[in-house]
Length: 144
Image (cartoon, rainbow, N blue to C red; front, side, top):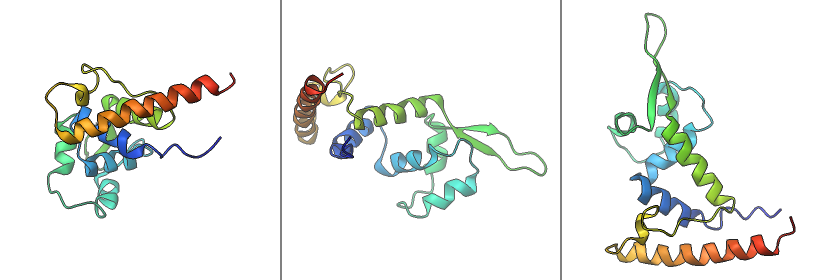
């Protein structure tokens, strides 16, 4: 199999950000944390150093339901965090799209297909339609 699954990375990323109200730096952080089943604030800060500065990012990820406390701080142990079920579902969806799952083209599942959207949303929407056509064509031609 070709390693061409990043071909539509920009489109998939734009969709995930639009649908879930994430910023690029937040999504980058969540992708980094995905492989860390449990993590400390220090592990979080290790990756945060290379992102654009945002004093409230960690608290916002918790407040918006992407990260949760797994174990509260005790006398000699630090607080341990984990990604929420919501976060894991969104990231799994992102990976499925990169691996060839069709993107939704219904306004109820994809905000870019609503009526009053920005010009950028319309351009990405057109790309999603083309992307889905390519995916259908590849599935039709691949032997099962």
